[in-house]
Structure formats: structure tokens, C-alpha cells
Image (tube, rainbow, N blue to C red):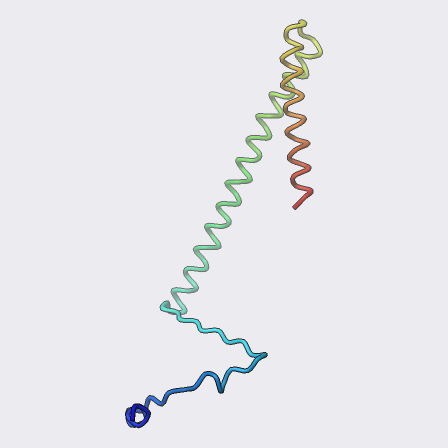
Length: 110
């Protein structure tokens, strides 16, 4: 009786078991944005991603610059400083070198 009511309304029920085969894959997507909104959203996402990359690169360059200055100063003090200066300069140099090696090894595993 329900099938007759559905057919009268123009909404016949579909048996998905008859349609779906073993090797078939179906995807349902529902979108509530217009093509113009989607284009604007994609452009905004691309701009945000580019800004994030630029900021990350600038931060990397700044950190590299600061670490290079500290490393250079420690090498200079290690070469010309007193015994006490050489002790802490050697510790900082070894920390920077081990951090660099750890970073490079971590990058190699990706």
C-alpha cells in the first residue's frame, strides 16, 4: 500500500541492492556553496597557504641567522678566549652541532 502511495506522489522507492554491484563505488556529495563562492574560497585558501609558507620561511631564515651569529661567536671565543670561555663555548657549539645533525637525520627519515 505504501508503494502505491509513493508512485502516486511521483517518489518511487529505489532498491539500492539492485543497483549496487560488487565492483562499483558510489559517492554522494552535497554542496551548499555556489561556484563563485567555491572559487573565492579556493583563492582565499591558496593565499593563506602562500602567506603561511612565506612566514615559515622568514622565521626559518631569522632563526638560522641568529644561530649562525651565536655559533660564530662561540667559535671565535673558543679560539681566542680563556679556559672558562672555552668550556661554555664548546658546550654551545656541541649543542648546535648535535641539533643540526638531529634535524638532518629527522629530515632524511621522511
